[in-house]
Every structure is written in C-alpha cells, then in structure tokens.
Image (cartoon, rainbow, N blue to C red; front, top):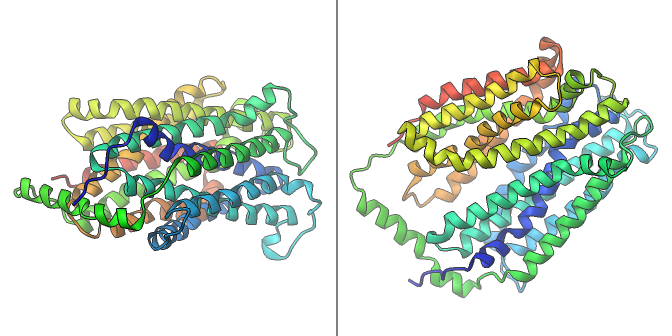
Length: 445
C-alpha cells in the first residue's frame, strides 16, 4: 500500500488554519451567551436552560457530518463543502444573534413566558452552535484523511495551538473594543455595541480563515484515498504483532470509568460558562444588576479571565508529559491537574479583586488541559487495533455532551439551593475534585 506523503509545516498549518476562525466564534459564544440572555431579561435561574442547546446540537450534528462527509465526493472535495456551509451559516447567525434586543421583540410569548427577543436569541443560539459544529468537524477529519501517522501528532499540535489562539482572541474582543472607546452599556434589553462589534469582527475573521483553507487545501481524490486505505490496518496489525503480551482493559469498562470522570468535569465547566459573568460581577464589582455599567464591565472581564484560562491550559499542556514522567503515572498527573482546577474554582469564593482572578483561572486552565488530553489517551489505548475505532470515538463524544445537558437541566435548582452564582463556581470546584478521585477507577494496561 502507498503511504501518505509527508507534508510541509505550512501544509499542516493551512490544513487547520480555518480552525482559528471557527474557535473565535466558539469563544464568543461560550463567553457571552449568559451575558446576552441576562441582558435580554433572563432570570439567573433560567440561564442554565439556554445552555442545553449547544451540547445537544453537538451530539446530533457531529456524528451526522462524519457519516455524510464519508460518502461525499465532489469537485470541491470531501470535507470542505461541509466546512464552507457551516461557516456561511455561522456568519449569518453571528450577525443576527447580538441584535436580538434591538428588533423590538419585547412582547411576552406563551412558551415558558419568554419575551420575543429571548426566543429569537434562543433559536439564533441553536443555529449558531449547529453551524459551528458543522464547520468544526471537517478540520479533525481532514487531518485523519490527509496526514500520515508519523505526522499526526504534529498536525494535531498545530490544530490545538490555533484552537487556543482563536479562543484567546475571541474572549478578549469585547474588552478590546471597550478599551478602544466602543460603548459597553446600552438601553435596557439591548446588547452593548462592544459585544455586537465583537460578533461582527469574529464573523469576518471566520469566513476569511475558512476561505484561506478552502483555497490552500486540496483534498485527496477517491482514487488516492483508495491507494492509502491500507495504512491504518497495517499500523494496527503491526502494533498487535509487536506487543502481543500487552493486556488492554475492556472497552466497556474503560468507557464507563472515563465517562464518570468526564461527567464531573464537563458539568463543572458548564457551570463556569453559565455563571462566571454573574459571579465576577457580584464578587468584584458588587452588583447583580444586569443593566448596570459594572455588570457589563464584568462581562468584558469574563472574556479576559477566559483568555487567561486558555493561556494556562497551553502552558500546563506542555508540562503534562514531564509531570507524568515525574509521577510515573498518567492517572496521577490527570488527577492532580483536575484537583488544581477544582481549587481554582473554589478559590473564587474569597476573590474580590479582578486581577487576583488571574491566579484562579490559571489553575482552572490546568484542569481544562487535562480534560482535553488524558481521556483520549486512556480510551484510544483500550481501542488500539480495533477496526471500529471511529464508531467508538463517535459514541465517546456523548461523555462530553450528556454531562453538559444534565448540568444545564439541574443548574437552576442547584442555584436555588446554594443561593448565589459565585457558589455555583464552588460547585464546579467540588465537581472537579470528585473527578480527580474518580480518575483512580480507570484501568491502565
């Protein structure tokens, strides 16, 4: 069988460059959705319900994009058509979503008593997350299609760098626009211009990045893919022959044990995305009034600390391999990382200075880095040589999405019990600490 040729650094860069723009859109969504809906009049006890849609869309859309794009061959490629369609829809929605409060849709509707502007924002969020998922998946698939096994680590490292770089830019946009003099407060029920312009610029960068990748990347033809199709089977056979005595844990047990850790971790971060703006406003600006200038400043600062978290994640991810070697255990490194993230969340109970939050969110970044790395290490080890790896990895996405849905459904009730949004971040910390304990149920080779 022919081997896929090596690609240059810039070839690998071009393959994932559009991911930079997609991640800016995703960062703008995750950092500003609670702020947008709170500004539109949503009660804090309702906020978590708006977050049900993103993971639900991920569970539905990502497997379908994989299924259909596997069967798509046209003059524009195999994955790129879905990438471009997703980007176009995302751009349209990014222009509409922040204007939900400016369309005069203020009348009450029967469904859950939400205003027209909130319903418009809800449907916009649904289409935005769907389109982001459509645009995101092809980048992961193109690396699998076009990069040989020797270069995949480098290719995914470049993709990870672009992902985190896009996150930092997206998180900082509202703060940067406010610094440049764009208005950060608006009439009641209207989204501030600093947020609106952030979505506009993010949409422009998204489509430009996707166009760049579209013109720079030429996917393999069906004939070429047929020539390279034996590569994975050869590699998996070689792995089995070379390590016949290596005993892998059962796939079912590994799925469940890692899924338990994932449940605690992703529920924790769901509450961070939902309640951190309100918690920061309360702790550092001393306000819970969503129409106040302090609340909107806290909304900007939420993007700043999310950027700090992304930086912390990059730094800790680079350190993780050395940590595993020092501790002689991936599980210990995984558990310690989650524990640090949990302590970062809990520490916010005593933080009243916006700059001290940097330390808390750097610790949170340690947990985030571990969540993005270790689950796939353990699960792919259990799957090594399995011909249904793609199917299992598709199902594994449920361990990311389902915890977020459960957390979103329960968020309002838990908020009612703990009493404040900053206490919800403490709940996030406790969940990450429980995840750190659950790590020890995972079986390694």
